[in-house]
Length: 119
Image 1 (cartoon, helix red, strand yellow):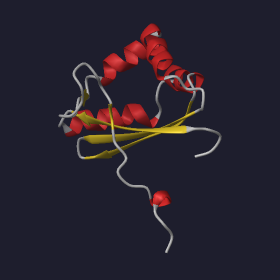
Image 2 (tube, one colour):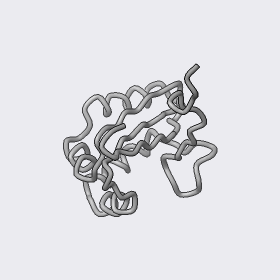
Image 3 (cartoon, helix red, strand yellow):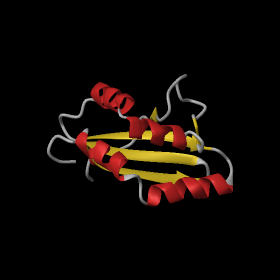
């Protein structure tokens, strides 16, 4: 990563329904413009979501000045973001390891090739 960016890796599960998963993926082919604008305004430089079965993995790169608390508060205060989040909860469920009352759960990095000694 460059420019002081940080990476967040998080997991979330989906409702085990092929029809609902297809709808969820359709919503993410082109998210609402207000949602994309909000993410960028808050300092999210890049975001990708991957799926395996019902498990989602999100990788988010944020600018050096990204503030998690400010992001959370700005999201709570934004009516379009709240509508989006309410809609997405139709498809999402917390993982078994997600803290109570939370949605996406932070993942712990256990390996980085960059940290390995060259041989």
